[in-house]
Amino acid sequence: MSDWKRVYLTVFCVLFFSCILYGYAEVRNVSISSECYNPGEEITISFEVRSTSAYQNIYGSIIFSENTTPVYNDDCVWHSGGAQDPPDTDGHDGGFLAAQGADPDVWHSVSKTIKVPFGYSGYKNIIAAVAENYMQLYEWGGHIENSANAVMTQCVLPTATPTPTAAAGVIITPVAGIRLEYKPGGTDANAIEPFIRIYNDSDISIPLSDSEIRYWYLFEGEGQDEIAAIHSAAVFPGNTDIAEHINGSIIQKNRGTQDRYLEITFGNGAGTIEPGQYVEIKSSIIKSDGSDYDQSNDWSYNAEFMDYERWGKILFAIQDVVGFGADPYKMFSPIIVRVDCGQPSFNDEFTDSQGNVWEFDREYTPGGWLSLIHISEPTRPY
Image (cartoon, rainbow, N blue to C red; front, side, top):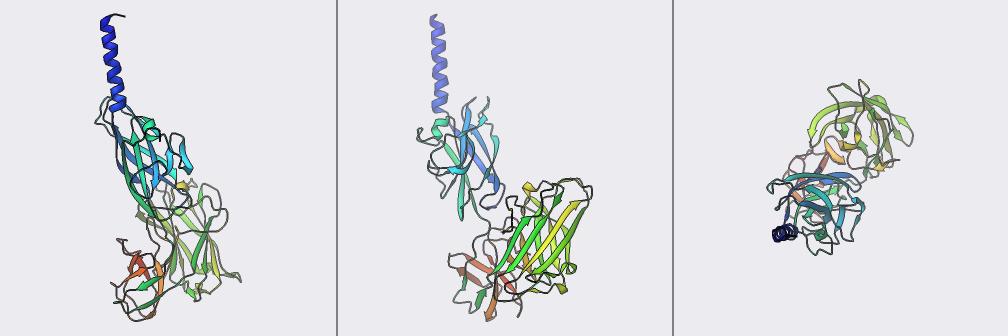
């Protein structure tokens, strides 16, 4: 081999391995398809990556963590092996994300769909970690070149007992025991079929008149009309038919990625749900041309329920007061309360046993219902 070829080869090798050893990957703009999560549901993590060296491959992992610092025993929900369900906590080499190309100033958009691990609750940091060498993301590499994160919390936290502040001078009692359960009524793609039960596990009557249920979904189509139907409605035990007092309609309203909901309303003749009773409603939505829906992206849908299960992503409101569940992307389920003493003010604040701060959703009308909203929510439920 001639001397100039040896020199050329030496320079090439030095430059090549320098790029590998000294290149640097970066990540930014981590975003999540939902503002809150439910264990077991699929969410999409999106972010941007780039390398400071031309033509370098970029590797990465997505992990859930209690804090913003990625470490190797964090819950890895995606790496080179694909989605991790259950999450991998034994280190992760990082999956291939992008080929850099010639321009190191180019940011590459990446999206990965993962399933939130069961058993999660509270706040979680979702971290995208990147490097130019996949071994640098594994325990052998000893470091992660760059990371960025976004924070999520559980959509519906367990209801805590609120207690009044000393200055409020008001005694309130949470009306515990309102429970909504749901299952899909069928598997036909051309129909949305919410089957819903509302249970009264409390010690007071729950009025159905002027109450409503909201089942949120995303419409796919080209302007077709939709038909909402109530197939049956009854109070159990006793199988008391109340279908003639219930109406179903489609309301178009944008809320995050969702653009409409099935509104089920109860008329004056619907009566009450007494302690120990439940009401069961079987309903459906179809398009006028019979075309299919994609229910996988619907807020209120859950394909995994084979029987009735407690479900916080369908809202039930009593006289405009949220009794159970939440509209899309609400982080805390409101707490419905009864006022036992005093005249609460709209600005009264209450704390619960977890230190969360709540406030009333409206001015109090004697004899009416109230609910407490977490202070972080920027808008009222209605």
